[in-house]
Length: 178
Image (cartoon, one colour):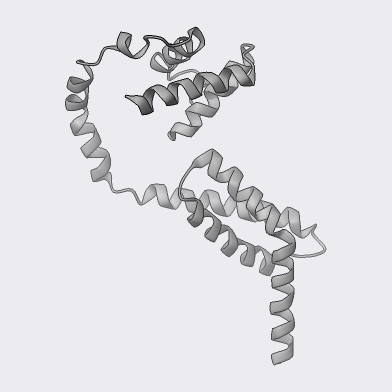
């Protein structure tokens, strides 16, 4: 009995080491798309590996395919439960403080911000400020969704990757300097 358990542990460990790059790829892709705490996502993915290992049926398909499916779906469920745990009071505080935030932003001059900035960056900033909510550009509530969607939109209108990267880097520089 003990040798069977040891063999099973060795098989799980060996399979984990074989699939570790795939798990890391899934975790990194999920983190880039949805954000969150990378270490928590990695820990959840490792837990999902054990579940996938225990539920895989060899006659149904390859383990790597099953692992990818189970891990991605499990991370989506994990992300959903985390989002549902946000207390509504946090959202209410944000809505209650909106008039204060608007009052503070009225003293801000966008012309001071755009002084000495390139034309591409100005175009990108105006696009961000005037982002229509009904367009398919905004694909989610997280800021990384909007940034990725903006990047895709700029690619679709003919901007190069270098041009887009330089504009975003200039915006980051402006924000960090002020």
